[in-house]
Image (tube, rainbow, N blue to C red; front, side, top):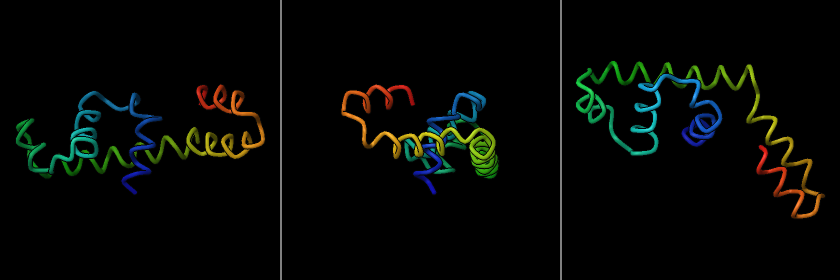
Length: 94
């Protein structure tokens, strides 16, 4: 699930608040513990946990509504038969 969440973050991270982005990046990309994040921002460990759960729900909701990740996977399967140049040009767009 962590890999899927980081992929969804790549698609929808800009839709989160700056604070949510920082918490997500600290936890998933910088490998900080809940306690470390809490100490860094002077909040409770429980507040960090709740925030990360809310972020997870939002990312899943964005994908269920917009389906950008799902569509990009479909496009990648459809372009397999194209030459490398065309594949690369399309991948740059998605």
